[in-house]
Image 1: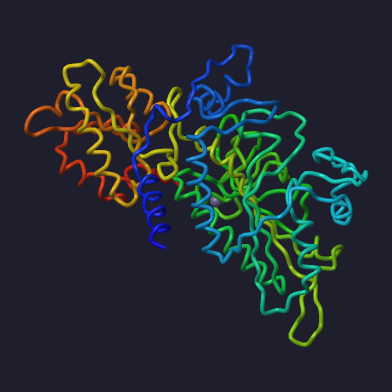
Image 2 (image 1 turned 90 degrees about the vertical axis):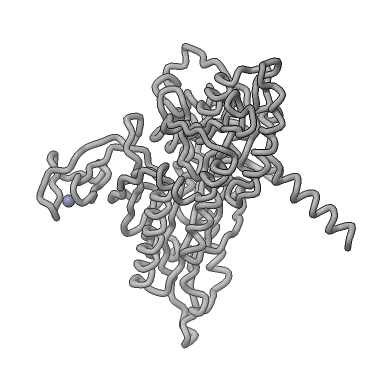
Length: 454
Ligand SMILES: [Zn+2]
């Protein structure tokens, strides 16, 4: 027992120690000139250039360690918001047999599916979404009404054989998605679920500090009674939306009936803009439960078809879309909460006059690591062969919101540290005590970083 606890203790202690920049694989890349799509897409350009992703094949990328840190934080926020609506997390299989997709009518003629055969020549596809798996599960279970509403979700890799994969993580052929499938006793209850999940989505985007617009969407190949899309206005967006500048009501242009649409509530013209779809909610009704005979047991042992909904968030797409939305031309800007690290501590350059105070950098990093929200979120840029200026620039480039420079002002009896807010370019000279105080109050830092405009 004692031995186990010792291992556990040292594991936890190591996990919390500040990381060293020299040990993180972040290899910047020059962008080939002929990639014209790259130059028009800020997020793709920046993510490649800053070494956050690596291109593998058309529409297929490797995500590098810094990106994974942000992605994990993003997934944690999503799990939090799914918890709020009593979501239960599952993992559905990636390989889906043709018979399931044929039951829903999504197999024949579906050119977006990656289809493949197993050794027995049976047909499968790589899951684009999982309505069929979720609905067939419920058809087998035939749960009693006591289990309802039931809200199942997963965060997993999805596949779509895009005709024209482009814009990096914004339109890939393999991508991470959060998909939720909900089951209710009747239409009224499934509408309650629909509103609850849409509210959770809105809150989630506000938490990220990105100004989304919720618009009426077309149901596309998913089907169902109604749908809403969560859109992020952006010039490179592939969707076209119309929205009311006053009440924010709007619709995807696919639903447009008149050439000059007007908001029915405010009676003013709707504005047109390009946008990136980052989330989608569908009220499915019994579109899937009918063909699958997915039913629940009412209290009188009468079986009724389940009323369904499905709700997607493009996880890797949100990551790229936030970068697209928040970054400057040269520097990545993350939603503050999901920045890969919150602070980069920069010790003096090797061979400089200040070199002797380098240990101060380690001690300030360790003191800050004891602050709860900063634990495992501090990196020491120990590449002391680089100048301080270059390391500040790089921290800003990969979107670390705060830099602490241990430089010439940190010498002497009352050392001062230069705290740089890379997002606003503000600088403070603070003593050790004041530095700790500055970072103690996460909420005030959060407020200054989240410009929520919805
Ligand atoms: Zn309006």
